[in-house]
Structure formats: structure tokens, C-alpha cells
Length: 174
Image 1: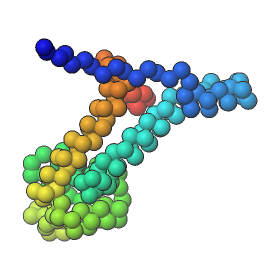
Image 2: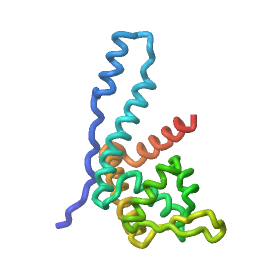
Image 3: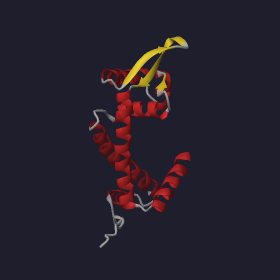
Image 4: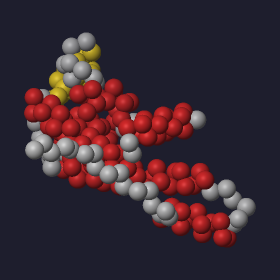
């Protein structure tokens, strides 16, 4: 006898959620307001906060915070040899140089990255992933994506996920 694997059932959309309660309250006291944008951004914010917290906890299993993951991931995405200047990292992560220095110090102390002189600029530095840093970021990105995939697949079919991604891209471009 062969068992057939079925796709997990999608969670039904709630009929009324916490964001609806907020917009309903506004409608009661200010019926002149159009609260659709509040509903959209309220849900985006709540989803981002919830998934951010879950992802932070997952990264903690690898001994890193979300901010530290961002540094390691930026180096990893840069491709071989996984090396950038602190300025390039700061620009990509939108961090001040002081904030970047603190993260780099902690990650270097943990053995996940190394700083070395820039061979093309006597005053500059280069930041590179170590072999351990590469291993940690590869594990952490896989674990984080698994959480995100689980959340998306619990509620949306692949076409809906693609459509939502496209709509959010459109909203972000505006």
C-alpha cells in the first residue's frame, strides 16, 4: 500500500482580526476617515514584527543576533571572497560607522569574521567571513528561510504568494 502525501490545508483567513477591530473603532468615532491604508500597513507591521521576533530567536540558536546575521549575510551575498570594506557594509546595512564597529568587534571576537588591511588603501580595512562565519551564516539563512516558508505556505498557495510579493513590490515602489 502506498501512502499519498497531501499538501497541508491552508489556514482559513480570519473573519475579523485585531487590525479590523482598530479600524472599526476609528470608523465608529471618525466615519469620515478611509482606513484601508491603516489596515494594510497595520498588518504589514504586525507580520514583520512577529516574523522578526521568530527569526531573531532562530538566529539565537547559532549564537548571533539579527543585526549580526545582517553583517554576515551581507558578506556572504557579496560572493567570493566574501570581503567588503566597513564603509560598504555600513552603506548596505544603513548603519553608522559606530554601530558597525560594535557589530564587527563582536563578530571578530567570536571568530566569524576577520579584519585586515586594505592592500589598495593604506588607511582602509577589509572585512572577510571566516570559514566558521560562512558555516554559521549558511545554517542561519536556511533556518530563517524555513520559518518564513512555513508561515507563507500555511496561509497562501504559490500563486497567492507570488501575487502578494508583486503587490508589496508595487507598494514599496510608490
